[in-house]
Length: 399
Image 1 (cartoon, helix red, strand yellow):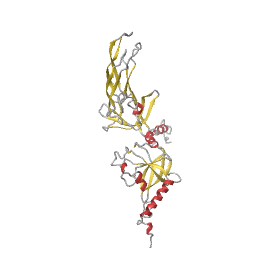
Image 2 (cartoon, rainbow, N blue to C red):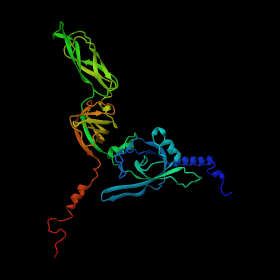
Image 3 (cartoon, one colour):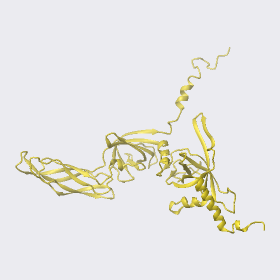
Image 4 (cartoon, rainbow, N blue to C red):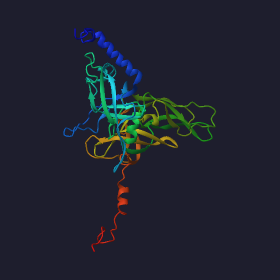
């Protein structure tokens, strides 16, 4: 007998044992990485590129790094365009583990293997690699089995892709490398209302005092999750012994997250001046209404809407009434170039779909992180010292 039948495709248990031993070795000697499937948004049919690709999910899985003496590739190079890092790595993942962790029905990922263009984030080195080639026949049919994928990867170069994961190291790539708009805003998202008194003459040193007879809702606010409570502050006659404070309830629309009306339940007594109406609770506060990862938008005068994703929030020293939002992946729904305009309303479309219920834009600047390392100016200035343009022939006059 030329072959042992117990170590062939006819004995499934031996093939499974071989695959399990491979998985065990990867778990012992491998590294925890995050696999990010690429979601194509607008692929160029001619060049096959999609700079607006999204990476909406990340999947933690163990992989073995074949490069035991450091990353492959040309390493760090000094070129005429600056420093370039050309690290390469080969990752090995078990087929069954990839199917269990990544290729799952609830992930809507139905590919049979890792795909070229997908990303692998290595927390050990805080580096992101892009898959260039997937080898599925190494080792070559051991026990009639192919237990692993080998992925040859190069260091990922960020070009504006959208990351929507909860991994801080991954999000930092987008935060530090994307082209951003710095949009400063001010204002409040709370509802506003004014009261009107109905006076009654009492024996008071200041004359007429009375209760609240009418409440006018001036602003419905935004981002309310529950109906806020209403408080009447000030306006009382201190010379009067006792008096009842007015009470009211807010009418709340859960769909829009706004206050749509106010019901006066008790007019109160002994008000000498109009009290101030405060809305307490119900929403998350301005600083919580705008969170990293949310999408904000402005309705432009041209009927186009410009929107962007929040990458960073900077509050002023006084609190959260004034702050600056750093927005990436900015675009408009009409496909034309627009920019944010001061004086308009910036709303959080992730938490409220009501245009005109946000904060007021007070300043807009572009934060071009992509061009921070450009050295054109340095080269241009240095070139002035190479040649003496005061002579007719800077290369020398013939004798």
